[in-house]
Length: 577
Image (cartoon, rainbow, N blue to C red; front, side, top):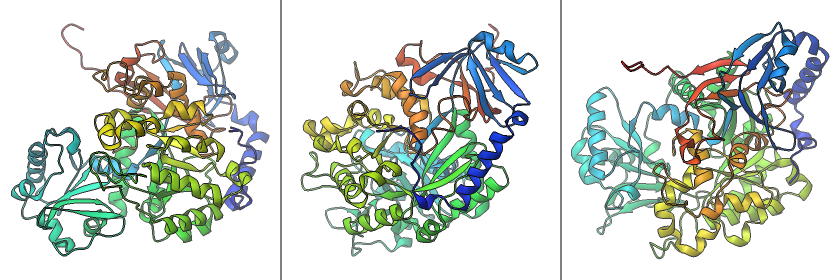
């Protein structure tokens, strides 16, 4: 698969915005002498970047232009002598790497979750209910009690929760708690009542109301059935959206994420993004995917892509929803789940509708990024990419499968052949390792979480975290990609260890290859000359520490366009200091 940006854009992409960007680039080249008037030199660094062939490059000195925010040069210690009048930043021997790119996250959800009850660490249904009870007491003004993060697979019962305990905890207000993967939710009776869900309710297409033996709702809703509840929750206003986004920005920057792909943005969210961008209030780079379920999708597509010369807000892709998630048995499989005969998962978008929305996206000149976790969903998506575009069009489109989690072995080679990018999240493997075998059986694991296989077949892999499904920390993802282990170094040798990546490959997936997945590899990801000076300084060199310690890395400073935008607070001194 070619990694050249030349010739990637279809004629439709050359809207007025694109032409403006090209003219801006031309002006920048013409005025390069003025733009180089304020060099800044980062010295004494253990620097790592990539060259034009995506190979790792080491350096001690990085020079960038303070006016434009772009890299001027990188090299050994002697390079600093060429910039005698420059401002100096002493890296103090710390590791310096490109700012990390999260190729699949949910920015607004992350910001909202920071002000909701966190259930990720709960070890039982009773523990989760206790946290909800405490949260409800602390938030007497809240109309709804909202939370996220429970995972019944980690509880002793391994069973979905029910109404019994949650109704005892909160009776007067509706409660809605999303599962960790966002593909199931747990409600109390008050929430079910507001949504009109009862014994006679019919499952919506692509969704399921969990029921007891008598047919009564248990309080758990799967995939599209969740919308029955979520339609009742008051929509946040623009100010509330902006507040949540600001919280997410600061959280991501502190973790060393200088750019993120936002997987599924509706009209309200996009409008706030555009307002914040116009006011220069977005401190990192956003590659936003329009949500295929948004009522305004056709209008947005007709308006054409948004291609920001500063790469702060780029919009040229659509997030399309194929199936559910593995943990809630919503991932669409070709044959039944091993641990639940008869269940084959759910298609959130039915085949004809999937064809239609993919065609609309592609015909509008936008990149199609389709959520597909199960092997059936992956096959359906690949089939449509094969018939909806010519080989020449596919090469330009850089279409993606988001998650590409469980793939029939014979479909793996189709990614490279169809020039479809796998967009994968390494921590999903280490989170799912305790249940994936139960869900799939041994045979289907041969095509599951298959990063090594896909890389060896020549695919650039876009890596991310899927925050807030997983923690946003990208060093957790790097650790998982390299070791296939959890933070307790289990299992010994790694889970499905034949699918490990090298650290160079993993870093590439979180930098230059993630940039490629957004048509941005010329602008960011490798710290090469002319790219944005987006970089981070670390408390340890990830290339020299034991790989098992990668996840413990702390980001000391984060720079976007050469500007310091986040800095770790110094540790409190003790009497021994």
